[in-house]
Amino acid sequence: MKTSIHLAALAALLPSTIAQTTNTDACSPLKLVYSRATGEPGLTSPTAGYGAAGYALLTNLTALVPGASGHALDYPAGFLPTSSNIGTTALLTYLSSASTRCPSQRYALGGHSQGGNVTYHAIPRIPAEILSKIVAVTMFGSPKCQPQVVGRCNSYCYVGDFACDGPGGGKFGNGGTESLNLRVKREEMEMAVNCEKLLALKPQGEKSRFASGFGGAHMSYAADGVYVQAAACYIKQQFEKSKAAGAR
Ligand SMILES: *[C@@H]1O[C@H](CO)[C@@H](O)[C@H](O)[C@H]1NC(C)=O
Ligand SMILES: *[C@@H]1O[C@H](CO)[C@@H](O)[C@H](O)[C@H]1NC(C)=O
Image (cartoon, rainbow, N blue to C red; front, side, top):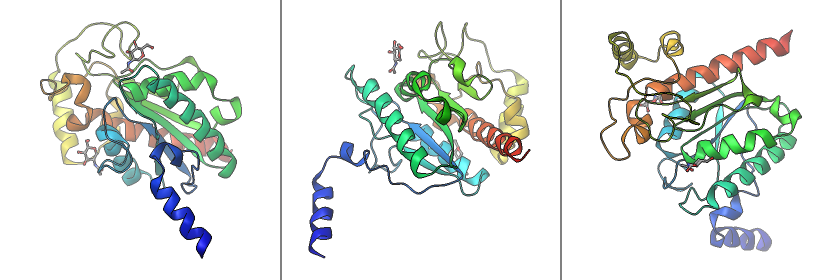
């Protein structure tokens, strides 16, 4: 039809920021809504707008929770001071429209670095009715958990991550070294995702093996993988808890 051809042509010309207002991804039992870190590539990249850690989190989560799906927040993730606010508004808009379209959908929110900031600043502004549908929040290299989501939030922080290993970050305090116990756990985890062991890790204070490259510890969440896998296990656990509570 003529009209639909015109619409398709128009959509192809519009910048991707317009696409976020449609928010048409399919309903699912659990939706991971994730915001990427500063400078990570957008929706058409191989990591589909999730960023490296976010994309690994999504694939780990969908392997653990069949039927779960994701939404990469469409926001600039840029260096301008306005970027984070644009993200927070986009997140609130998305949650409001998705919650209307998909009334029984549950959410896991998350982000890395600036994406964690976006999530952190949105949480106090999420209406209670939608907040009750958020089963888990997982952040990497980000601020600490907001009081509104205590008991369903982990803010993962590697030792030496400049963004969170200090006052105001996910972790308060200073570094440390990887204990033998943690190293053994990590070696076991590399064989297979073992949620029992991963959930026993503290969300703050693990040492990344990849801390020396670009961005140091702050950019090694995907390459190291320990906290990514732990986050996927945590979201699964929280989702199952919420289903059990709903069934009572
Ligand atoms: C996160 O927000 C804090 C203030 O809330 C700011 O100091 C910091 O630069 C932000 N970090 C990123 C990566 O956006
Ligand atoms: C889980 O995340 C790790 C770490 O980023 C990644 O190496 C691995 O491929 C992911 N596993 C799955 C099943 O997606």
